[in-house]
Image (cartoon, rainbow, N blue to C red; front, side, top):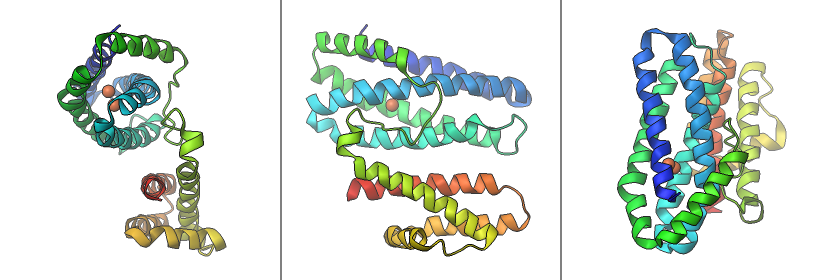
Length: 247
Ligand SMILES: [Fe+2]
Ligand SMILES: [Fe+2]
């Protein structure tokens, strides 16, 4: 099948689920089931774009490089949200809000793909090539993960070329959770890692610190420590990705 036709079909499937989710506002259990389907669909869709479609476009249409890099970051953020939504109870206070933010952000991403990227690719790649890519994506769907893993490599050669970035992510996640612990348990100075956090944060990472300390405040109440830690993770990982890609 033609690659773009296939990706558009996926988008339609997901949009249908989004509408169902919006309608299920008063039925949390139903909403939870729909969210599970969203997680499944988007995890597979992101995987085949990241492993097949985006790398081919990047290779064969160098002008699309910036669009692809932006798309990868949008996927990254979406996968963090999905990974948080994945474990949420249907009656959790933030479940609906988090899923709605996911939906808004995916709609934006889909619009950019359909309005800008796909028409460019349609011009830039031959029909035969698009069919090959469609077949490759069809095959990739069979091995695609069905749950979100924002820390997994999002490019086919990630091990070789972005080793640093993924180390960066890992250590940033570590720092975030240290920060979380620090604010709860008072082990503020987890030595080297804390100072890494300091270094990493020279570029406006006040926001990590900010979140971590919010975490501290809320954890005075003894609640929501997990939620805070994970939002700190999101911020830290996003930053780390930025650090990784700039360094
Ligand atoms: Fe995408
Ligand atoms: Fe897409």
